[in-house]
Image (cartoon, rainbow, N blue to C red):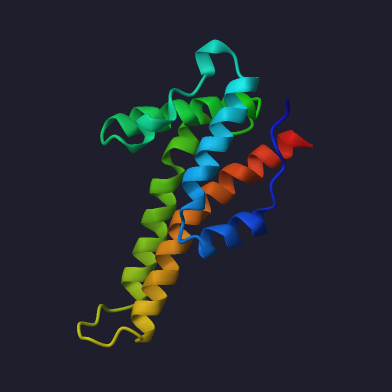
Length: 139
């Protein structure tokens, strides 16, 4: 079995439509595909560990280690592990520098909509980053 080639646009669209629930499915399916391909020391553990606080950090490290093995070393496990934090910090810093938080009952103000769109983007970018490396290997 090979890793499935997934469209980055489809991943983005499905995340927006399902309010980021597609990410959970993506992690599960990708974990399953990597476990079929990888050796025993690079297997990703049981998926429900993903939902347990503190242990999910260890699970995510194992996922990134498996990602590095599945991409044949193209994606460094440490870069994969810290990518969500780095992307979040960069976008969060940019957001805090360019906008101000407005308090009030207006749910349709541009700042609230921009904040929602930015939070979706921060959540989707790491998965798009990972999938781009997996797509290179799946060809």
